[in-house]
Length: 336
Image (cartoon, rainbow, N blue to C red):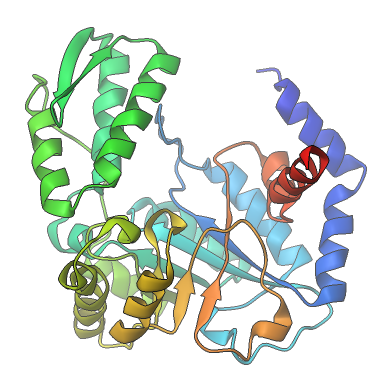
């Protein structure tokens, strides 16, 4: 298959050394990069494709060469060295982590932290976003045409990939702002409108998490249900998502849980305060930038992360150097 124009562009940018320049800047300033990854697999997925295993392997080889990869728990005592520091973090708790990602991390000698959705660990059911994605995958595969209802709003489904991705995104945004019980009721009602059983990716269970820990992966919370924390109105709901998830993880894994990754990376002052009250000390966002080393002595730490895109190798090689966010900043400055 011929590379796309986008892939060719990033290959050229890599060849002329843009990534090396950005990496050198991090080294000079002592900045630390924290990456945010999700699924690693070769399975097809129309709406949320995983990072291919080969691309992940090559990306980790690149990271091992260019960065000093440190565990998240080692940030507070980190002293910048000859290479810029980097932390690997994964969200959600998909079983393909232990099947594909963990062996590659072991091969390259890289530590990581995996932040899990606790209700998925307990039930074995996929995260709600993945259940939604698989419905749309099946609609695409079976070329289904029908009108569905979600939260009282009609949506027309046609087996056109672009239209399906757009409709999936609109339903996702509508469900995202609902509390967990309302969202689950709506999702079950949506699944009942199809004549095929719901399916989804296998999630890691408690034994899987313990195996990850034995292999050097730290565990953090990604809340109880992957609800958007900023939308939760009651202190009880926030306490459930943050405090209950930390309590269960600590009890089941017999280790202190000091890290929480905010779903979608979104937060506000109230979410930060609730996270601290629940006992967390490392709060992970997805702000698309790096962490200045001079802030490492501050506690608690709100740690920005760079999202690893489910794209080709060369775009991700630039992405880990914060290329995409820098382009956004340049464009914003040009429009100002």
